Length: 213
Picture 1 (cartoon, rainbow, N blue to C red):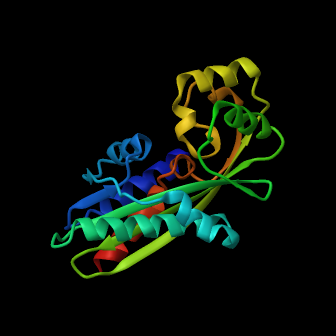
Picture 2: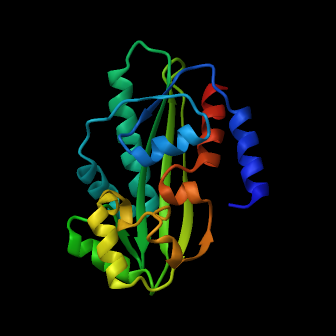
């Protein structure tokens, strides 16, 4: 992200300070890290839903609708849990589109290897959905941010090292752009880094502001 873009994002974060407490409906340490890096105050609560079942019902509608359906289902589950509290519930979901298919977290190491090898042939396109629900007013707003990451061929020893570390097994599409092992093989990026990681801050800040008005 360029210096100008970082300054614009910092300004939008300042402008979007909320009067209601924020609950992040996610167990992702990567999303939490991004929020903390932007000094967003929040607590976490994990929604209990069958993500695969929800995603399967929405699959025919494309990657953006898949992740949005899951994020909305998470929101419904959490709103029921915090009934009586006046908060802003933030729920997210992400899928990776590649060559017409939708990729979620790899089911095993071999699938992760296949994913990582394939990105030399075509970019990974991330679809990141954010849903913000104001439990005081009942207002709910949402959006999906799309970004692309291009890769150089990733050597087999690097792929094995990434899988051994373990984090890529918990990421949609089986990659982490902020892993030092992977950084030398990152090429052109279309979109923001935080969007590819799964927490598009520009979108989140806009939705937080909209949810409170």
